[in-house]
Image (cartoon, rainbow, N blue to C red; front, side):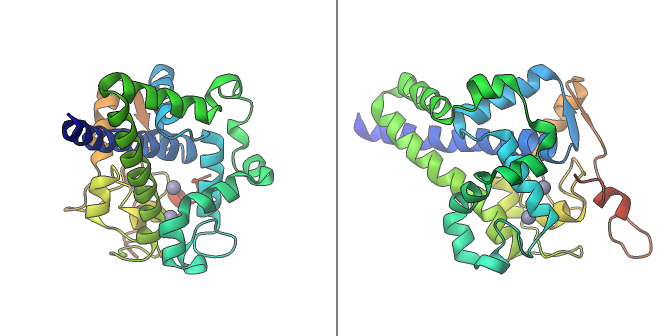
Length: 258
Ligand SMILES: [Zn+2]
Ligand SMILES: [Zn+2]
């Protein structure tokens, strides 16, 4: 039945996006980019594999672009600031701005020095299209070509849309409890495994938990807690230390981001 295949394709596409978003925030973002958490090598490999077959992202490129974003947040040369480029350019063409910056060798060499020379990446996992091809093949094996086609399309649109929303909406609309231009949005946090608490994150980039206050939600924290409990992960610190005078996170934590 074509209709059932379409429904299954949409469900699998959305599930793939959630898996990819979870791996992005826990492994690429909190783990590699900010070293807010350290994970068991086997867990890291599982996350690396998920990133490979669901996004084709090369971790050192993602990390470099992201660290540059933190180094120049919302000022030149931030690679994807809505304050510089305009909201819609970032929301609709975030992938283009990401690729443009990731292609700059000097950016990768400068901001991801610690991730250069990974042999497994160089030999196999940097082959983005091979990884994505394996991802599509898995969808095909589950439900045939219609499921693979619909699932892939839904995943591409929703993954790129959510990633763009963190950079565009997450620097434009929402609450700003701390002194930076990024914003907190619970609804965005729900669909992005916590990334929507972006004002908190810019205030304290090395905090492994992105929700700081009551009624702020960070779904990834549940996964992280489970991995910590099973001794497969350690966190640097969950929340930052807040200055009793200003209510802002302490400078010590902020400065340790790179
Ligand atoms: Zn940001
Ligand atoms: Zn970050």
